[in-house]
Image (tube, rainbow, N blue to C red; front, side, top):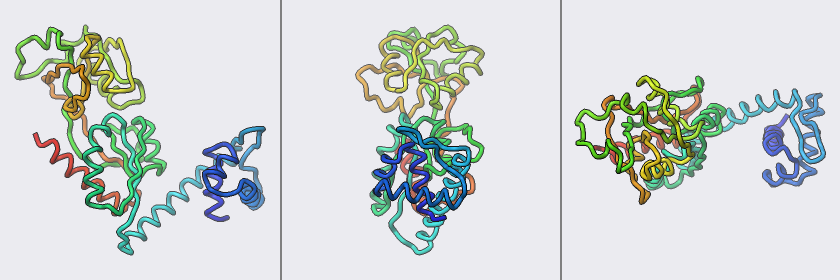
Length: 302
């Protein structure tokens, strides 16, 4: 059994198609089929069930793929560790990011990292919080920008910042017209308000729902969106209210801007850089974490 056969098998499993897998691997399709046949003969089992246009994993194939991913991930970690030991300056780090939070923070962090470590290549993957946790646990990313709590038990993390959560209301809302309360607004006052929230699968939606429930009410959700900018624009247009992380509230990119009001309980979320527990962190990954912390602290001093 050869490492390249593991790599080939993983690509076939991902593409579910020999032609597409061969294209991604930059090899001829007959060579790919030949290598798979040699591997199946060696193992004495069929890994894939060939259909007319696609291939599907057999029971043995599913088990093989699970172990193959772990093996290839271990190989990559070993390669990174040897690169660090040999003091190679070049490197590569795969960063996972929540699209909403990342769009407001990474434009400051990535240029700073590139300026300090121009030889290190950064690959960025954007996905929902839940999918990012699965990717990170499976070795699909070296690090991921997430917020607590994490659902995946195999992950650990480095805290990088605490972010206050504010209430966003339309400019014509009764709360916007009131004299600001130095202590902030109690969440309990919002139980009869229409809420606009992010769609399921995004971490901040869960936190919004949990905060409302902790205040004793189930929020009346009237609209949902995948984009926090859309949520804020709908609030500004008078369609409802929402909760917004302060880093995002500060970045006013739309002509429609809601009014932001502090909450008396000062709820917050903890942003973290997560990675798989026990996974070797390359020097490039460690440098990225440190750059993220430094840039965030400098950017949001107040």
